[in-house]
Image (cartoon, rainbow, N blue to C red):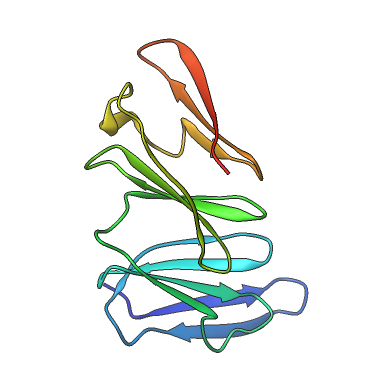
Amino acid sequence: MRRWLSLIVLNTWAIFILLFCRGDISKFSITTRHVIVISSSCQCLIYPLELHAKPTVAIDLISLPTLIAPSTSSFGLIYQSNSTISIYSFEGRKLSNFQCTSIQSRLLTNQVTSLSSRIFAIIDIEGHKVSSLSCF
């Protein structure tokens, strides 16, 4: 596993290296303004792209999420183990938490989930329907 993440700014070719002291990198996602990192020690770290040195928010998680679903104003952490989706703001505030009991947890992947600024959408492949949840 890795304890560092390299970011290369394409228009300037500047290289920034983010180091992690508490666990290895389990998952990460990049939006237009933030880097979201999940460490193996069940911590979610949010780095603004302007301040590459240290995270501005650290969220302690109960377990490791399977997927990160980012949007411009928030991000979702998807847990396949119990079909739960938690939505957070980039300031670390939990906006919503809900469980998808009608969809099999193994089907919650980045191909069938999407998050906008106000709606979380899931495509149920087996049920042939689209579910949208206005959750925050």
